[in-house]
Length: 391
Image (cartoon, rainbow, N blue to C red):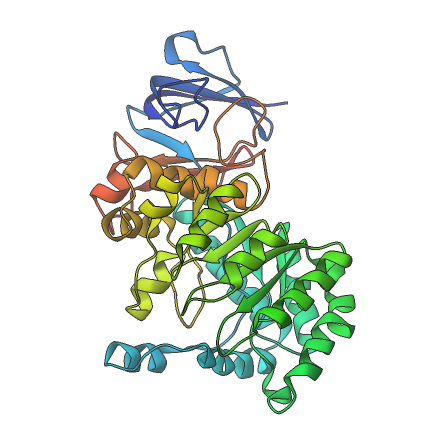
């Protein structure tokens, strides 16, 4: 099996406190040895074992590959007009999803897959090595199943989101749509998915509907996650914690009880914050500082979708989190790597430590802090995914 040594790393973020300084496990003048698709050794460059191939980092920083634990990448169409109107004064609501539903239904499988691959490649160039993505723009049994089938060909982290909004076909009978989502559609989609999700929000699904959908998904072997408390205060966070969901995503409007619940469930339910959505909708920022200080586990993700957060850039989300959500650069990087891994209940990604998957990003900078210090600058100059240099 081929081994590769990356040496002369100026600053290495391992996310393993046993290997280095602080929660990020920082090492200076470090080296990493990759064997196959796995990290085999981490330590000082001077002590690096011999390897078949060598790469000199020339003093640049290396971080774990980003873990994007929330995205919506199986879609067609464009919502530029909606964005333009919103930036001109119109508020955001869940209803705009219907525009993408119509375009996605009209697209061929090949068109949907080509669009997915384009966005995955775009994200990978920016250091993302693990991607979660959802259905939710088909809202018929056939369209939801094909979205998940297409996604499953490109990532193991696939989420059934038939409950994105009530299908336009069932506008006059939401209860019948919930029956579809928890019955025939679930049966067709579950074989392609690992997760079940629901948009628990005004204009989408209320608490009782969300509970029924998540409970049915869990009975079919899928693990719950929840779009919670994005546009208003509501039951989403409490429901996520009650059902042991892997994540409550958005968490923009939180009561003290919501924060306490997430803190108490820090080992089970991650608060995944999606600053791209607030940036793109001019909405209130989630208060990451409040969550972290309370003891909640926080992840950062892009929420990449054509309507409310059309960015695939985890570095951009890190910069937003530091500037507008009161996170430190260290906290933001941890949340975009190890935090995302927690949100996906993965122990093999999000860290550079022996035995972990060899997912790394090389920065054209001496420190990870530059991700927030130099916003908008394409600092990722190399990416290894499963031990293979892909960028």
